[in-house]
Length: 404
Image 1 (cartoon, rainbow, N blue to C red):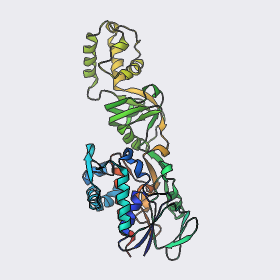
Image 2 (image 1 turned 90 degrees about the horizontal axis):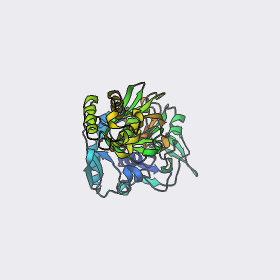
Image 3 (image 1 turned 90 degrees about the vertical axis):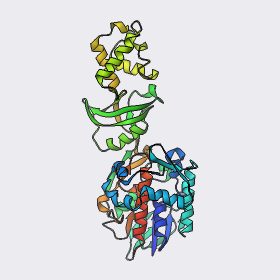
């Protein structure tokens, strides 16, 4: 049996490895090397999985977690760890159960997978973009720049549209659509949230805050954790996670609110401010908040409170103090949208999983066609979950495709 795997990312490489013990497998990659997106993952360190339970894993899948039940149970985070160590890649687990190569080099993950491909006898065709995939009487015809090739089975592992410079340009959507599949519109996931007036705060990081999307005072969704201000909006772990849920809701007339002191309710925060003010009675208001807030945030919070910067602390009324409490608990920025899908860490959307068998990753419409990884409408939060999804679905697709 001849199997073609299109796409040399983690999903495609794992699919080819899984299929190759009983099949003749060729892996096609448009780039000059395999795993190009892996090289930049985890800031060049490659957070390749999360050392958590299967149950915890599903809580970190943003889109279509039920579809992934079978795949994650067949090739779990623990299986990924065993696979890597069996193939000579030492690993380490860091905060949040994030698993990295012990060397902190993403390139070592690609080297390990490339060596496994060679060991399994997989033929790898680099610099070989596929132009079309069509059904034939006996299987499939793949058109390259120079040839038309015949295969019994095809596994599409072409990724999404994020970081197109790494080769993720949506080719798989074109192939799948021509073979009858519906494509869920693609959206950015794990991306920045774009807001107005954040430029003066660019680079400021905050820990233990709640970032909320709100409309008319009602919270649409929120996330606790770390964030950082960017020139055009907000980034950081809490923001990235929140973005993967906000991309599923209407954000018209929404704004971002940041609770800078989530551990304190309004009464306790007010009491804290009263204590601070009692020691700074003769100071200007804008100079009285240095113990409460980071220096760079003071003017933004003071401006939202509506209290004159130069007003003496001993002249501030209870009503004004209540406005200050509200500003600290809900520092607002006008939300203009989410970053472009090109700049999301992963792509949300893709081949509709309703048309894919979750037990095998085979198309329900075209026999012998399989899918793996980000080309499908599945995505997870940060922490190694997306690469694990790629490896698990690749493993299932490869094992299913090789069976007669």
